[in-house]
Image (cartoon, rainbow, N blue to C red):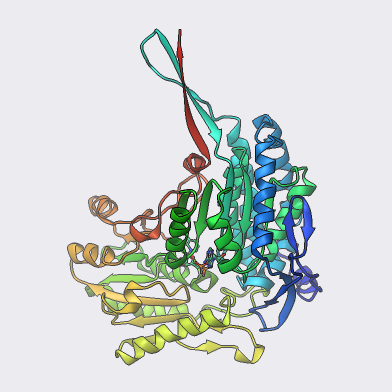
Length: 495
Ligand code: NAD
């Protein structure tokens, strides 16, 4: 599917200014203001996008409210919604390469990952929920025969969605696809540094026949547009992926407004635990490296803490460093690149700050640790492996969200569990062992939403993704995600 010649044609195509999509129309901001969109590939202005005001956010919310209340979407038969959603997915797939290249120029993900993880994944997610929605039934409760008790499932109303920059289409579609399939309307705010492809998707939704006002995208600053959505009395449910810092703000907004439910998918510091009885050490080395370094480590479930049993630690680290040095981070529009750019200059500086702190503490920078390809003007960082990290170091407890791997040795299974659970997060994890009993013990003991065994990062729309502890609440993906967007209503009928 990936054709380097076509990608090279698209890489320099001019990009017109982007506007909001509100009530089925492209709109400028109410005050005409725009934000420059800087490409992380070269640090240059790619285009501009509307810098949303509170009025714009409210216009998007009002459009979603009207579209929900008049039933233009929620009153359609599920099969009719399904037809439009399926057409939307087909349009996204038809334009997948154009959308993926635009996304890469906007956020820096390597194209061979972006094509699968962004347009193709969004199309797949839309299809999954479109296919599911006419198979969801209500219930008849087993009550006393003198009554008939029914449990209906109804769309909740207006869904506010706020998403991050690492995989805007994949993560965005985990929210809007089940929400829309269930009959809700949506107002979505993308991240400042990855908005363009979500606006493009909203245009395609209209082309597929989605009624105006059902899916609105308002671009701009989180502190303005995001806050307005969070504080709105007209938004019924808030779904968010991003940092814990902003997740807390959303809970506050909810408390200060209408107590809207908030489902938060937050960060992680996921432990990848390798026991000495790992079935295939070379395989574990490669998969562990890919589990942290794809998309330059900007993956919520990245295995950013590598816990290795001490007796194989040196051999493992040796092989890991050798493998990492064969990776080829660089131009994300080159299909041979194994990782692309870091999303922004501030993210790059934050990543390098973690390395400096580890260096000051005397930890070993085994490979990487520096900005690379500076002459391109882009924000690239060498994949970095840091050894001798102490479980209480900031590098072991705080999310870097960059290509930096902290390696920590351990001696016993109990110690591995203690280190693994020793952060505020609980998103993902992995265990490498040939011992089936140990694998099951670890699945029980690790506090995380996902435990991989003898692999890292496998995923599918069919299984839920969510965190425990401060990695969030609620789940994206799978049929379980629909629970967030469908309200239960009891009908109690005396016979
Ligand atoms: P962020 O929290 O800074 O921003 C997320 C979104 O919130 C953006 O759209 C931003 O504009 C918006 N926002 C900012 N200020 C706001 C405010 N005051 N009110 C409302 N909205 C506001 O996160 P980020 O830097 O975009 O993304 C990285 C974070 O996302 C990491 O912590 C990462 O782990 C997390 N993440 C989690 C998952 C998951 O599934 N658990 C997936 C991907 C990323």
